[in-house]
Amino acid sequence: MLQILLYIHVLTSIVMGIYLLMPFLVKHVDKLQSGAAQYGFLNVLFVSNRIGQFALILSFLTGGYMISKGNYSVLWQVLAIVLFLAVAALSGIMGKRLRLAVKESSGSAVSAQLGSIKTLATITGIIYFLIVTLMKFPYLV
Image (cartoon, rainbow, N blue to C red):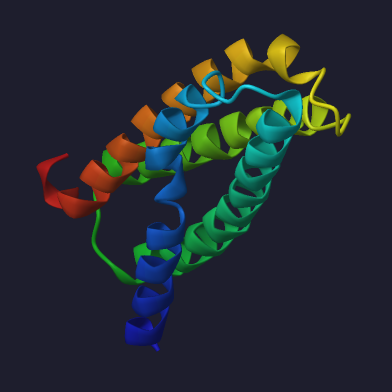
């Protein structure tokens, strides 16, 4: 059972890799000329963020089970939970900004939300990088 959950956990972490790519992808929205192209690109990022959020939930659940079966320090457990909740909160806020940006298919609402989307994507990417590092080296904390 533990091996199956570990496999699901690793698969969901691969899916959540979109958060590492998101800052670089959002940076290219400005380079698209038309509002319709920006709308389409941000719509893809919105769907990717939603898939990442579902993967985050599944990873949190499988990781919680694996923590209960392992021998990890309390500091590591607290850091893992806090970082996961930070990614969940920031991706939720980013999802709202993306939803507001793609509200109109003409792309007129994109420029109002783009700055905060870039900032949230960058912070989420950094925190996800910290999560991957923490998971790779659990016994250093």
